[in-house]
Image 1 (spheres, helix red, strand yellow):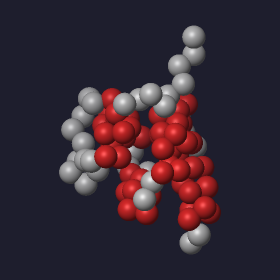
Image 2 (cartoon, one colour):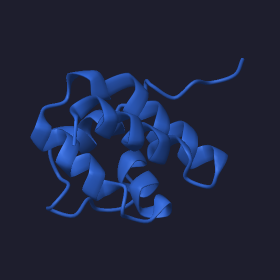
Image 3 (cartoon, rainbow, N blue to C red):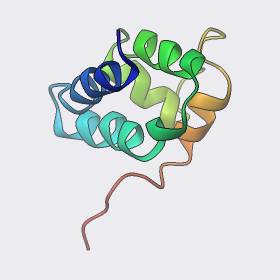
Image 4 (cartoon, rainbow, N blue to C red):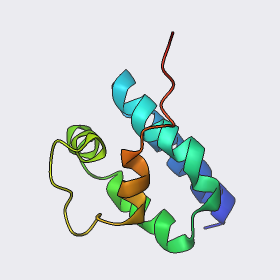
Length: 88
């Protein structure tokens, strides 16, 4: 599949998770970071999207241990949380 088409599909899946919080965290992360991802990082993110939202969010905010499969630069970047818009 073409890289651009794949990223568009992943972007839709990342920002249509079912809850506003997950859409902001996971979709916001995708929007902020995906343009620079390698093919391996895209593969890993695609796998990550198969996980439950509550698990992904817990890993991102540090309330649960990240499985070895996802530990690394992708989750570490997600933990920064500077990509989530905060209303003032």
